Image 1 (tube, one colour):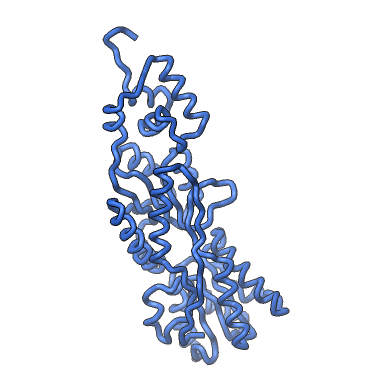
Image 2 (image 1 turned 180 degrees about the vertical axis):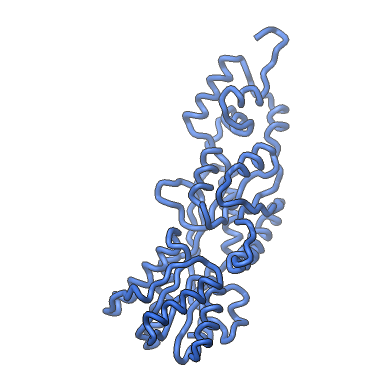
Length: 336
């Protein structure tokens, strides 16, 4: 370097092949940055006689007081997930507003991950709340590689160390199934969400455990894997009735799927709950307005949204990874 040449954070970022925010955090010895990456950046800075100026740092790593809510692109048949998003967002927004933060809604393509660096390096947001269903593992890995502050809704895969908030899915499956068994139902079906999601697997485990506790075995003809759309719910019920015409109860992994299931039952000339009892999942506001009002497992969605916001802000401030499980309860109405 000559006497009149000066390196900037952007120069160090280019040399280390990382973002400017990563450089700033590494030079502050932040716990959010991995040890190997931090030491590499600090070594580059030392070799080039670069020292982080407090004013430059504040300009380079400005807080935006904005959090991105990351969800899937809109598809007409995904009204289930959209209604869930609206209700959990109310809890997130309330918690963020109380802390002086705004919420930016970001719809992403499940097969693209460029949004992470675009929004983080452009100093547009301070962190992300990840709510996508499709390609969630890919999104999580991209966020971790970018060292982006984020929290996810759902259960992290065992090899992915990240903050999360989720409902008690195992107990949710148990509560619904146990209630139907104790009500005298004999042929109890299970209509799942995406089979690759750990939360869906846990709900199924709860269903299976309660059947076994009652001395029954799982009839695989009564287990249907699908997505969270209303169409999939109705199609699952049709398939189940073809295989097991004397079906008399079903646990469904979302409320709007369950409402579609009840309509399909009626199309077959059967009554809910007299002929087939139905239990949904989530306790969205529409559940109480269904015909008949839907018995469902409540995840306390709005409160869960508040926990997502608080968990992310704590992570941004401290670097502590927290995994929160929200208790669930069975809300008894007229459908079961």
